[in-house]
Image (cartoon, rainbow, N blue to C red):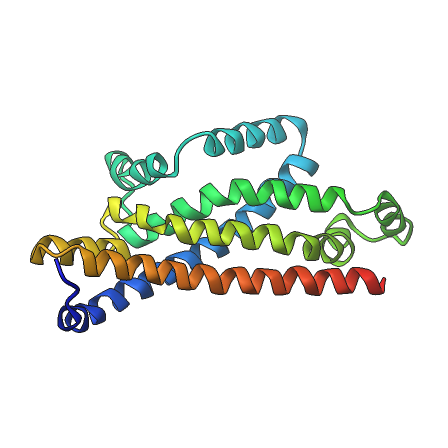
Length: 221
């Protein structure tokens, strides 16, 4: 089957709409993961033991089950107990929860990397626990985490095609719909691969920039 540029021109607007949903799901999912990851990390490190153990179990359970299963549970099982979510919202929540558990480990490592003396100095200056976290610990812990968190962002982006399983009209779902309707697979699937490759390469370049910038900051210290 030969490549048909006219077909590409016809389907490109639809694929671009799907690409917008893919990017939107990634950005929103990353925001959810960043917040939940920090919450998971702080609870596991600072909450009372019973709460910390329950949180640790939940984090390990989510990390140990496939994202696709979690998406199916959110979209197809929760309605049985009266919780109905729009497909995109369910996908964003699924991505956010799943990758939030991975981000939690990054946050934990970054927080534990802050010298103990910083905690003691904050206590000596009568800072509250909240002030200590916000003004002392997190500003030092977060910058070294950025490259690792960016890696998970790229991984999340590459897994957005799984959202097609819960009817989200992201890029892969649009490409499959076009291919099935026209019995032409080479153009839409190739364009999907090219799109993911381009965004991934841009993300890698940006990640390298962040790593180099952080290295320069560390050298100046």
